[in-house]
Image 1 (cartoon, rainbow, N blue to C red):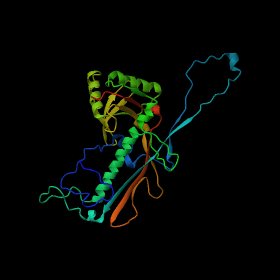
Image 2: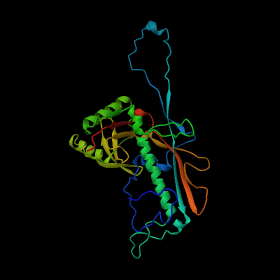
Image 3: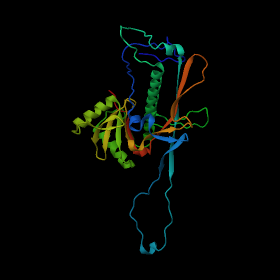
Image 4: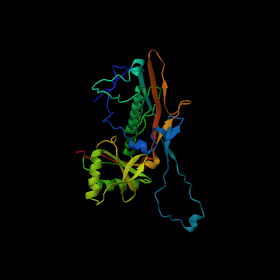
Amino acid sequence: MANQVTGLGTSWALPNYAGELFSADATQTPLLSMTGGLTGGRQTDNFEFPTAVLYDYPQADQPEISERESVTAPEASMAVQEQESNVVQIHQEVIDLSYVALSNIHRMSGLNTAGQSPSYEDERLFQLQHKLIKVARDVEHSFINGSYQKASNAGEANKTRGLLELCWDNSTIDAGGGALTAGILRQLYREMADAGAYFNNMVMLLSAYQKQVLTEVYASQMGLRLSACRNVGGVNITEVETDFFNMGVVWNRFVPADTILIVDVAHIAPVFQVVPGKGVLFTEELAKTGASEKLQLFGQIGLAHGAGFLHGAITGLKTE
């Protein structure tokens, strides 16, 4: 497997080969694609942004007010609101290519046969595309697995809260190493319903192993067959029907192998903080100190995830 080069990219450190380019690493980012990608979503001018304003109703009860009691107004009571928030985090990548490396695009290493062409024609463009995909992968990972941290000074990093951490204190079931079953799925659906989930646009994200188990569960225990029936943001979604909602099912390599995550996509969006005069995710040339082209890719991105009770998860599932 190819390595990463740090520091200056030279014609010796960045060999060019004939042949089709492949990467075994995950480049699909289904959650990010469904919610707007790196070019959609919302914008903010504050690194901290609101994700939900919560309020409650008292327990439903039957009134017991007599005629005599009704002539005197009861004590006033009002609902209190509580705001929840998340933060954007910095994504910053740099490429530094020597003029010599840029000049030797047709100098090919490895096996060459007459008439072959290099796998790409522009080193700068290839490296920038590679960085954009890296940022997208990091965003997808953070939106699912991110651990919240709000900076209190310039030396501390903001870290956006991911959906699994959001679910942990709301609707999360620990399977304790057990297998995914119809029973535990029904329990999660029921707990989400009891917690107040809206069920507007539900999508289950899960690993390859759990996706296969889920297919078997629905086929053998529920007598249903999973079939692809809709497309959201370029992502093919298999859909199933539950007691409370219709749910899409999407394989996602960034979900832990022992976890399934159910999210209401209607209440999720990437949030980008604007740099005045530059935009939200941009490249610019850095100070030149010699015969190289040094560029940085910069963006500040966080997750607007709505209220925690909208989503749910099962963790600690059997993985083999």
